[in-house]
Length: 118
Image: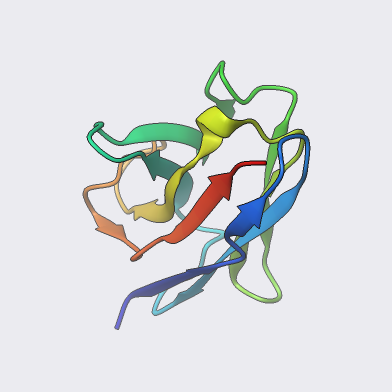
């Protein structure tokens, strides 16, 4: 049974850091494209980062966020530094079973809330 469970969100001040975790079961994260997405209230979801055919970042997070994969723990991480209020959103991870481009439609987790505020 495929499952994705995110953790690590919370309230942080501008300029702070968080590390999000996406723990996978039912498949191996090494084999498929894994991505992080976010959705702010009233907005469409936005792709933040993808580990697929290549590593990809949205322009808005380049230089601040780092995606990584831990094979031993079957987990994908998103290290977020220098957080800004506009990073506030529900962050969720997703696996794409066909192709090397990440999309949130094959299977996604429930998400973890990130709030950046002073």
